[in-house]
Image (cartoon, rainbow, N blue to C red; front, side):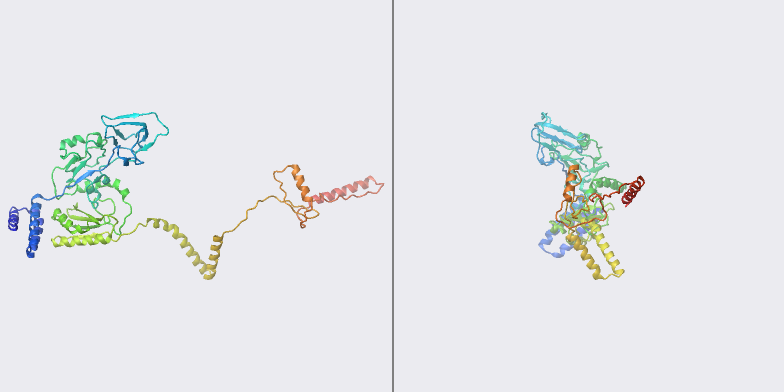
Length: 520
């Protein structure tokens, strides 16, 4: 068997298949290494490797993936409703205003609802043999609210599966060498196609084995499933093993920029916290990339050889990491490595070093990059730092100022302790009812609080009587309040006979005394 494969290799060289020279050279180097082993297992591995090399040389080995459209827009799917339950009979169904897609009732059924609120831009797809009835509105009707909102974009990576999590966002979408699988024809489909024209290998419904022809797919794009969209998804004209994910021409970089901008408009808001110290910048990825990269700038390196080597080198890390092999816009080949769970810099470093050694053993010189150590999410501490750190800085500055002006450290600390104690203990204030007090010069000098506000004249007189009554208290004299109301009136006896002039003088003298008292 070994001799026959060697003859076949010689024939391939004679036919000048120079475009696969690197693949054959790698296989030839591996063949020489296996010959030196001289064991049965070595000869068996040699035969298997030679067969693989011949297949690669003849077919231009490429890997085509099937990528599936994920969104489920069916009425009967419980997870599509806010309360996790499908609407019951006589329910009040509400579709929010943000609903801009179609909702389908796949199975023929007789639905009876008490009320149905539809959005302006969405649609409800009814089965051909089904029936929808609206009964009288009920106040106690159970409300069911549709949970999905907005459009479903072709350029949203969350709407597709079938690619590695290590792939950049652009390559998580269908590439020109990928086959697209849509839901079966009995399911509801609502897709907003990309603005920029792209190419795929084929498109088929999930219930069909054969894909659409070019003409069938062009006609299918005119249906209402792609309403408000232009037919921008086309079939690739030819196979290109050394092309990038999408078009291969001098305008690649311009197309890459606009197509990636359309993707990142949706994806950038989901980037979240960057869990690595030195994130990588990866072509076609909208967020900082926490992982590792093994790359070579040599354009003649076979993508298939690198992919097979990466699968063999990283097989032992399959439970912890994922990897993706691709061709860059510059024509080189790179392997992207990413953790499946939380980012681990140690595991990524070990994996890429192992891959580098294995690629170098096959004669491929590569460079290695990693995103450094893992870091924890400290955004909360960063946000609260200025609020908590500013008071501490102010306290330190005040302490230095007191020391500068001659205060001892002990006195400063003592004052701080007293301030802290007063704040900690608080100031106890006894709550009392306050009123107005009136002080009078009474014979016994008793002082009482008179409730004057809001009382009638009789109550005021009673209070005055109580104030005049002795209560056995101490004597209090208010020098600012002098009242002659309780003083006995002094009467002066006039001698008779009294002349008119003398009487006038007496009256004028008393008037002067009264005026002086009033001025005082």
